[in-house]
Image (cartoon, rainbow, N blue to C red; front, side, top):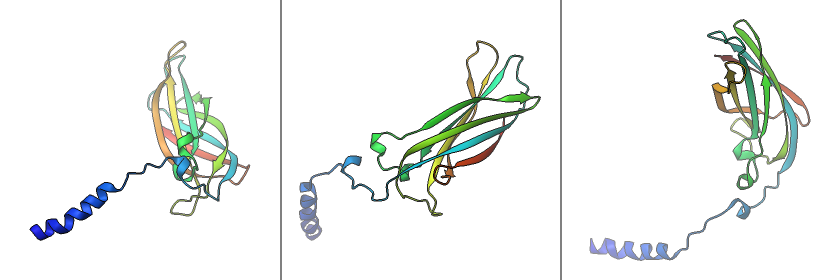
Length: 163
């Protein structure tokens, strides 16, 4: 036991003398693969209503796009995010809401396990019970990975939602 303490104690003393180093994102080396990316997503929400909306009610949709965290070169400076809202067209038990979400920001070459650069899509469907009423969320989804469209191009995405 004494021999074990004799061997371990000097190692612990050496480790205690090593100063802790905290790195901020600014301290990290800049990625050589940083580039400006831009494009647009057309998101169509196809909704099936479990119960009808009250008279004067409405559905709103919101889509948010952001770079996947692993691909954004400066998370300490805030993550850029684009948000667009739309008003759904309701016909009986079906509703459709379409939004176009343009984006442009810096992105590095980080790729996922499939070799793709990804965007993060979050969305929310809100209901309004009538004129003057406040919207409330009825469905949300976060962290949906979607591939980048080709540079400066438009991509379409259909999302089926049961409400």
